[in-house]
Image (cartoon, rainbow, N blue to C red; front, side, top):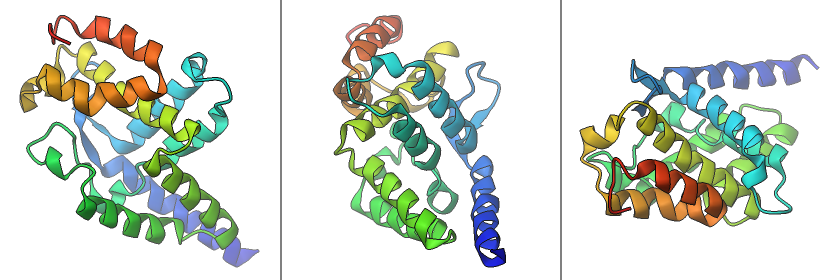
Length: 196
């Protein structure tokens, strides 16, 4: 029992480091950069509140689990913003490999029965090949949009984001898992991106 608890708390203490990873996106009031721990919590809340936007059969509890876990790899890899100058690296083979190594290390801290299950959920989210993961990815893309809207354009201005970039990097993923949600968000975007 002692070894099991040692490993569980080792993971939990490691996960605390996610609070130190700053993201490109700011808080809704624009006062500071959001950290990845805050982002993960906010996304879990998004899933809970926007569950009615999920397709029939989506398991919201699994979606929440994925969203709580999805960015833990940033402890090792950092945040790679999709709109930054390094945005081309987002989703690249190099970043994916680094994230896979980080996931193996971080989830490997846990007892095997827990670590294996959580690593599988993380991999499912990354692959976005199940309905639960597709919906989770949609929320992961829409939350920064709402943060940027709330603070008057936020990092879109900083990164010179175009209508086409927002549509291809964000809209396609949100629409895939939550089409009605993306239609609503599109309406909110018109003052920033008239051609969207």
